[in-house]
Amino acid sequence: MVDHHWLKFGSDKTFHADTYKFGFVYIITNLQTTKAYIGCKQYMIKAKFGEKESNWRVYTGSSKWLNEDIEKIGKKHFKFEILAEYKNRRSLRYYELYYQMKYNVLASTLEGTDEQAFYNSRVGGKFYRPVESYEDPEFRKKLSNSLKNSEVLKKSRKDPEYRRKQSKATKKYFEDPEARKKLSEATKKYYEDPEARRKTSEAIKKAWSDPEKRKKQSEALKKYYEDPEARRKTSEAIKKVWALRKKKKNARR
Image 1: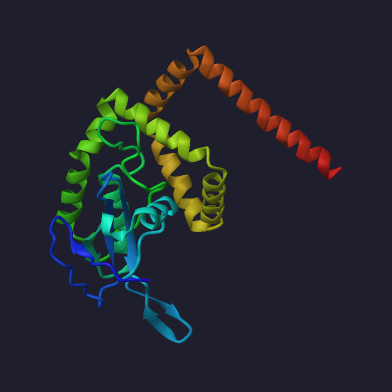
Image 2: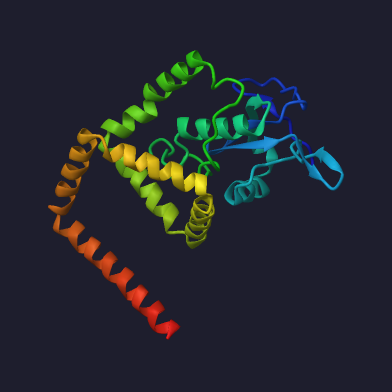
C-alpha cells in the first residue's frame, strides 16, 4: 500500500508526526464531494514482543464507505489531515469524540442536499477525560464553555429542522441490525462491571432527587401521551415485549 501525505489541518504543509506521542485525530475529505470522515489512529500497537509501528502512514480510516470511494476514485482525490496529536489513549479517545460531536458527524448534511456530510456511522468508543489537563479547573471551564456555546448545541436546542435531521440520522443508524447488535453487546459489557452499575444507579437517584427535573419529566411524559400515535406505538412495543417473554417461557418448558 502506498504512503499518502498527512497534512497539517487547514494547510498544505506536510505534518511532521511525533511518534513518541500515542496517536492523532484526523479528518479525511473527499475533494470531489467534500464528504469527510473523522477518526483517530495510534502510532504504535501491541506486538508479540513489545510494540511495533502501526499502519498509520498508509491508513485510510475504518469506514467501509470511505474506503470504497478511495478505491473507486483514487487517493489523489482525498485530503488526509491531522487535527492534533495526543500523548495517551484517554486523551486520544476523548478528542476523537470531541471533534466528532463538534462537527456533528451523524446528522450534518452536504449543503443543499439530504446527503450525509460525513462517512461516520457512529461516534467513537467511550467518553474519556484527558488525563494531562482535566485536573486543571481553568481547562474544564474553557471546555465546558466551548461546548455550551458551540453552534451545534445551539442548533440542536432551537432549530426544529436540525432536530428532525438528527432524529432521521439516528433512526437510520438503528435500522442497521449490525449496529444494534454492537450497541447491545457494548451495553451488556458495560453493565457487567459492578462499579459501572453503581455509578449509573447513583446518577439516576441524583437526577430524580431534583424536584425540578421530576416536574419537567412528568410534563414531557404527559405531553407525549397526549398524542394518539405515541400511545399506539407504546402499546405495540409493550405487546411485543410480552409476546417475546411468553415465547421464551414456553421454550423453556
